[in-house]
Length: 355
Image 1 (cartoon, rainbow, N blue to C red):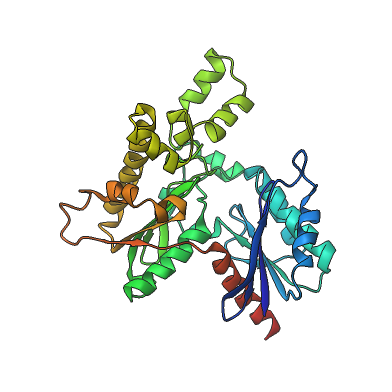
Image 2 (cartoon, rainbow, N blue to C red):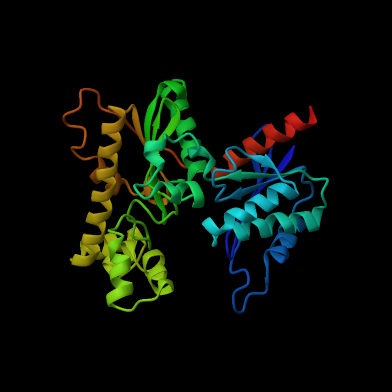
């Protein structure tokens, strides 16, 4: 069965065609700069039309959908009700869900309604978080009435590497305690106890948690009111600074690329060195916290562009952190394959429907 996995961003489409159940990738690629000035690809429909023209046969389509709120706790076959509910979640992910919906709508137009489409949610891996981990210390009615809580993101990636770690360790996932670190331009850490996610660093949005490429991660929320009240900053400006001008780029004033920062730091650039130091320190703090809440772990898993490729950063993160532990966790580096994880879920759902 040919399963096409689609990941629509605001101005891009990543795709991967799998033969299932062999899990062989038949064709993959990315279309970028959609709708941007000077681009010949004006919208997601045009981009998907190009992609589908390259593919002879599609029997099922899976879409990565960033935010499912509390509505979606597992992958679902797309119908009009599902589309409406995903649209309602867009206020929680205004940069992502609308693009995901555009991808679904475009596939319907191009292939008709007979090809099953499945939505796989990045937040679904965290639906079992305990209340004490996902409820913020705000008036409870903000959660009850407006859904303000920790949702967590990168769930598809964390789930994939956790399952891969269990195979590597030759133990059932349900018997393992893991700390999974997804370190790319966006960064997150998840504590997985006996196969279940019990905490994660990203929160109501992907802004919370670690220092990232351009996102600030954890800050004192009073900074926002200070900038608005005393400096006259608009909410739009604050949002832009926190999401696009902070993190490694903001601290260093140079770049959000760890390779460039390491080269600058090696030549004596103090702010590049400071950005790296803060990045490493914040990750170590989270790992220490998750070791405490789980009472230790069997392995720490690194994935994502930096997690997989920056050995020096991994060594700094793990240096001396386990010195006083009776049982030292394994350190695993596992390349994430979110598209394959999605393809597996789609194949299972479509197979059940057919059989």
